[in-house]
Image (cartoon, rainbow, N blue to C red; front, side):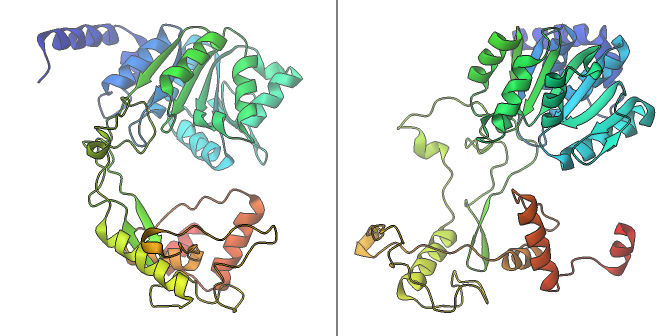
Length: 371
C-alpha cells in the first residue's frame, strides 16, 4: 500500500497531466497510462530528451507515439527510427492507422512512401545519410524517436546510431527507447552531455511473463524451474537493477531446471562417447558422416578441451538444426516464432532449407489469406 506522500505525489501528477496535451493524447487509448509512461511523456512535453528503459511489452512505444502526436500539434516534423526494415514497416502501418496515410511516410533501403510527410518512419542509416547530405527534409524537425536504442552497443552498426545522436541539431528532442539497455543511468548521463537535459525513466515491472527455454538435442526445456513473471528478482531484460552482492546472488537467480541439467549431462556423455543416442546433439542428416571428433586438433593446433567434472572431457555440443527447432516449437504450441538471422544470405538459406524439407505450417485458408 502506498504512503500518504506517494498518494499525494500521484494526485499532483494526475492534475498536471489533466491540464496538458498529454491528457488529450491519452484519451485516444482504451487504457490508462502507467506511471512510467506519464513521467516520460511529461518530460517530452517539457522539452526534454528522454531515455526509457522498460521490459518488452511494457508499452515504451507509447512515449514515442506521444512525440509524434506532439510534433503534429506543434507543427514540427517527427522521424521515427528503427534498426531494421521489418520494424520500420510495422511501425509505419501502426502510425498510418492512427494518423492517416497523408501524414505518415516510410523510408528504408527498399521503400520510399510519402517521404516528405510530417511523420516519417525510417531506418537509422537513412537518417544518418540525410544528416551528412544536408537534406531539406531536416527542416522543421522537432523530434526523433530512436527505437531499440541499445543498437548503439552493436560492434558494426553502433557508430551509425552514435553519429545520429551527436549530429542531430541541438533543438531536436531525442526520445530513446529500449528493453535491454543495461546501464540506463550511465547512458542517460552521456545523452545529457551530448544532447542536453535528458530524463531517464526506468520501469522494471514485467507485464508479460517471460519463460526462457534451451534446446538440448531434440528436447525443448525451460531454463528455470518456474517462469520469470515480473515478481521474480532476476532481470533478464538487462534494465537497470540494484547492484548484486555475493551474499544475495543465490537469492537473485532462480533455480535451474533439474531436467535441463540432466539432459545436458546425457548429451555430453553421448558426444564424448561418439554415440548418437535418442537425445543426441547430432542433427539428422547433418555433419560429414564421419561421426563426432570432439578431440581433434584444429588447423591452428588448438589445445584439447579442459577436463570437466569427474575428470571427463567436456564435449562440444552441436546446435540442433532449424528443422528440429521448428518441430519442437510446434509440438510445444509455441508457433508462430521469430528467428533472428543476421544476414540477407543467411535468411535466404534458412528459407530454402525449410521449404526444401517440405515444412508447411499453414492451413489452406491461412495460405490463401497470406497470398
